[in-house]
Image (cartoon, rainbow over all chains, first blue to last red; front, top):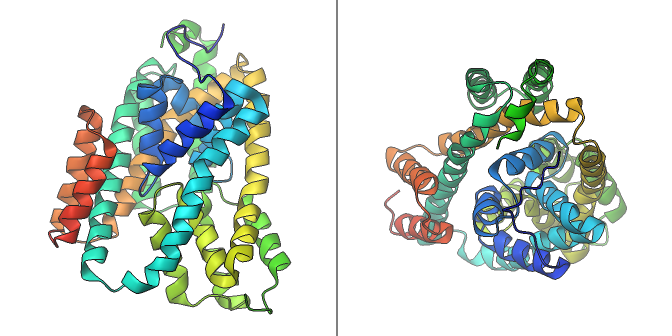
Length: 199
Length: 175
């Protein structure tokens, strides 16, 4: 059993990891997750949607910025710690220079109505990118050993807890996360081993 | 750089916050506010809020708002102190955890974790979109968000094209 699918590609070098993550980060206004999914799964085909969700699961549960954790883990998967460092450096270096330059310029344009309006419009689109990516990733749940109805219940409960009730994330991850992992544990024992691998 | 800024204390505080930042650095913003605006008095409220807004409007990971705060407090040295502090512990832990789990990827516990967390991870993305949208009132704003979501889901339109359209529409005052 392996989690490498034959049709997937892989980066040729640490340099390619650095360049791809730099370009990916530079497209990410208001969050990099949507771009990361599109570039890693669809353009580069380094990961399947299922693998992307798996990596993201670790990125979410561990402390630290999700997308940076994703970069680290993807880089490490291909080239060990050198790859992890290359991917993370790609994600951070050029954007850091840009954000500091914008900070210096910001004071001059902060009160400009056009700039403020443009930022608002970009923010609205950025929210849409996250939602659209989430819609796309729901297809990864079709191969879940928990089955689609249980996944749907967990998904809606987690959404309501975080978005509507505004419960602290730690408690949602500990509470619902534990329930979900126990359920998956039981279903895996129940003999649906093949269902987890068919994706 | 004001000579009074204790960079080591700043670095130490962000080191501590790093391991508490489950769900990203944005989740520990209240504590950053308590220390940087309150205890240490390095930033004004306006500077603090602008740091987050600037990072969100810039390309790249949102965690860079931490560097903007450090920069506004103490220049480049401040940015290095806050960013290194927030990143070092969490990246070390993430790398160790990734290796541990990859070496044991056939274990039932690891597989159960991945399968169990998948719907919750996707729900958190929906929740992020919801919270970002709910912050700003007005139906045209929501319409723009919904349109972008459908385009990402159903088409291969370049993401930067959508962001650019959002900037133009917003700049013209339509949202």
